Image (cartoon, rainbow, N blue to C red; front, side, top):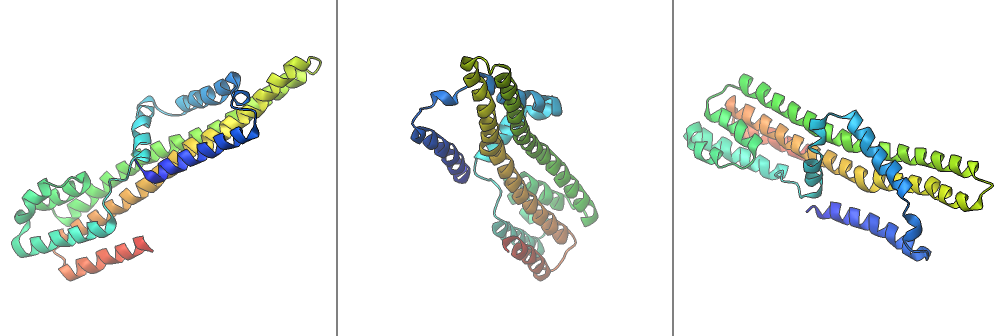
Length: 251
């Protein structure tokens, strides 16, 4: 579990709960079924209409990625590993690292260096890996956009619920007993929409964006390293270029 995500979600929802408790009226007045239907039901319905079913089926897996610790190697460790491979290949030949490449757990790294073992040229390796990175970015971008749209839709459904509640309230001004429930719908739908958009969908969207950025950077480092090794660049030049990327990432 990603501790930052856990602390953020628990802290945000916990503070809202604390504010309700300190308000002295309990949770009862903050629970309204029509508001739940409008915000949660409306958000799910609109999202289902905006995206393909195959993409929506991946939402659970995307949420797990956001909630769990990143599995991407730090760029500094990745640079050291690439330099190690480059040195071994320079000294003993590419077949010397074949077994070690097969044991790699990073699928992108494994594929890149398997191309080296197979004797692929730089002009073959680079477009293949760039194409793979592009497809990965599209997949990640779809999941990020779904959560982003859910956040915006929840806020919009909250406003729609507010209008529904206000119309009902104005239509029943002569009946004091009906004004309260209508006002509850008007206020609570806005609250629910803000909570879902900020403390749920917004958190997942932001986390996925950050994790994608880290993974994309790692992939770019791997591509650069594999292409330079295939081009038989000197170890010194490989170190210099990879360390330059490392400096850019850390700044």
